Image (cartoon, rainbow over the protein chains, first blue to last red):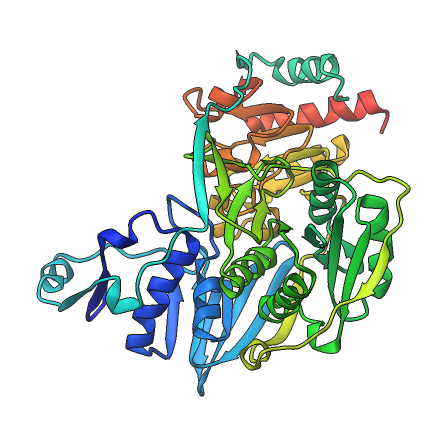
Length: 177
Length: 319
């Protein structure tokens, strides 16, 4: 996809890391690299907290902008348009900074065959927990799993011209009109 | 010791419904010892009102440097308050701002943060639905302070006759917290109720065919006294504003009635609306996943059904 080099932080000691553990390890790796701009994506598919960047920015003591749908970098600062519940905020921060983009920023392109082949030659470095400042005990725990409450059976009808009437009857019976 | 502290986010001169809902839940679970905190500029008047929603104490950090809704200065205020008062639990209602504040605060305090909770008990066990809400995970904290973000729309505010003791919180900002600058705020014009507040949501998806199709949803929403929602696909396509987006990367809503128009019901959308009281779906594809979790599904042409439905609802409501 375009990266020139990759750093993998992988260590048994980091298995089961919670937000703080992950953020501390990432911040440790970033302190070695000292990049001007750290970019995060929308959220992970597992934890999905959509807040890791804020913990990393705090650890690095750097300014941050999240949920960014448009991004410009110029003159030592970065300006991001942040999507919020209420509309858009345009926020400017000086570099070095942390920016988390939202999924509206773009549609990722498919990697080309040339890119895939080229990626095999790109250097990758693997760091241990000790390299990034050590692992920390999780502050959160998973205690157990329960099945959620299910919904009732769905009633599906084909519209034969009376679909709208049947919806109104259904809503009236459910006291929603 | 002020046991529990609730972050009271505000917008345009009012504490958000989500924050008041969490405050009510906190008061119900943790009793009298629940404080709120309002952070901003010119927000003192907001604080006293929170007493009616369950806060016995409301802390106010009122400072011009806190005018813009930026997370990092809020972490500074909260961290000092938590340390000075020995707060054991800090609760947030999910929002773009609150998630950043909570995660920054967790790191500052070395505290555990659980998010997307739909319940919490007084013995410190939270419930977090996972894997597209197919399982409820019971989560806990290994120590205090405990930080938690609740899923948006989970609790309704409960208004009582309580009053809050308003106190000043100190404002001491870190150097890096003052580096972000709010250049401009552009807020979507609000017509009718917002989707967080609405009892009825009429949401549209790709099946509408184009941005002009949303007029069908708007008319039906107006007839039902509700708000209009949208899927991520149509928001990304520019058919409707992000503020209306329901789903994993938008809002989680739980209205009494959710009408899904031309929405296939992808899992990312489902997680944002499956807590709705009653779900009615209209879609031409009878294999659409939305029909698996709708209470009433109508397979047909939405362009025929929705205008007729709007007329029938108008006639019935005499509007």
